[in-house]
Length: 296
Length: 296
Image (cartoon, rainbow over the protein chains, first blue to last red):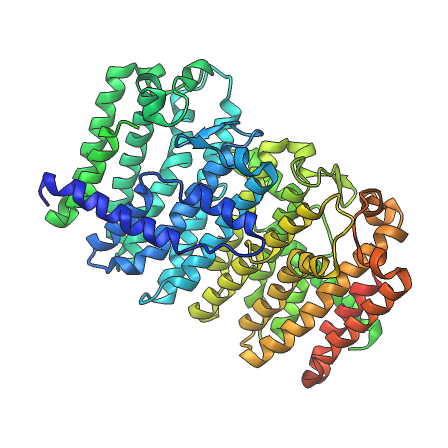
């Protein structure tokens, strides 16, 4: 794939994912819960997680239609974590992707329930909609998805993040724990689930896990950098929140320049982990670049 | 099974379930989330849902160890719905089973996350721990569990329940929707999942669905009756809440005596749906009686 072809690839995959997501949820009685689920799921976003899942499936020669239900489930799970993170009892955010957060539109009770429903539906969707794949492999995907999200993954990261709020003595190990779990675990599940659905063996899963861990950390470092450097318009949320909250971040520990450098090194490591796959790994390599070069 | 043997059966199944539940979650870093999950999961309760699941599996000649992971998952899902229902943004309850509610002990943020983690873990647990059953059947169980809990089930019921709060003009159809979803859907999943794991065919699932729908409604009618007649000590929560909230209930629509009568009719219908199974259905029939005869 030529560098000039990547934006087309990205736009085309994103359109496919948006279309598939739109078909996951129909509005029926009681309408408000389905509308609330659709509101956050279809509000936009880069669809990075589903695209990573599809790309990992195709890297191993799989048909990406087999991975699409899981790709959608990963976006549902990610969306539910954002809805719950934004709640008054958690980060208390009014804006997400430039739009009012779910509880601002539908109220707290519906926002909590919409998150719960998305999480439950994600597993149902994988179990009921994945075709052309061995049932035992689908069970492995479900196990990976659950493990990545539960207290062993995203939620564990969020718990430690909440516990560190207002503390200025957070060390690098704890910061690392937060991000490898809050962000990294689900990104890793995206590529390992995609790889499983593409027929990947355990050596493939190991390469892709290294890739995902590297881009996961790079992703978070860039997030921290953008909080310092980007405008509110770019972010679609309030910048400078970390600093205002005296939150320990990579830039606050390392400085901006060293943080940028570290993100680049991680991207190089991510690409390096895919060297066995030749040109077939181009989309995942460009996706790694895209993650550090994004401006929001 | 003789009537006198049922209490022993019930106590023995409950002890088995309690032991299995205790083994589902180990406390590790970050401890607070695992402690919060264990607090609500292991606080006690009748374990009616897991026992129904095991009984349905055994009714069809299955080995109940094959159904134990699903039985535990059903209790996790049920527990998570109680944790979230008790939140200030929902029913705002301080007591559950005579103990402080999860958010009263751990705070709102951890209570929300503990619920999320239990839900996600439930699916992971079924996918990873069910042995000796065809993978395609396990996928059907996961699909059933997701469908019973998501907006199509428990959550849909909770949404309509919240929408009816403070309204005195709720009709029987709406009340029926609330209970067939908020309580009935998961009870139905208990027996259908158990039946699937026991090797049940679609005709078995149909019989057991009728059984579950009948006992689900009977269960709710008895709940409403107990809210009027039971003491706080019996219930482990504040009685008379429905009346104080001017909530429409079966006793408020039909009166106490007609409600008791209706519950008995439903139990008879539940037992009748199992007539093809002879003595093997005794545990499920006694469980139906137990549901209307309980005093909390």
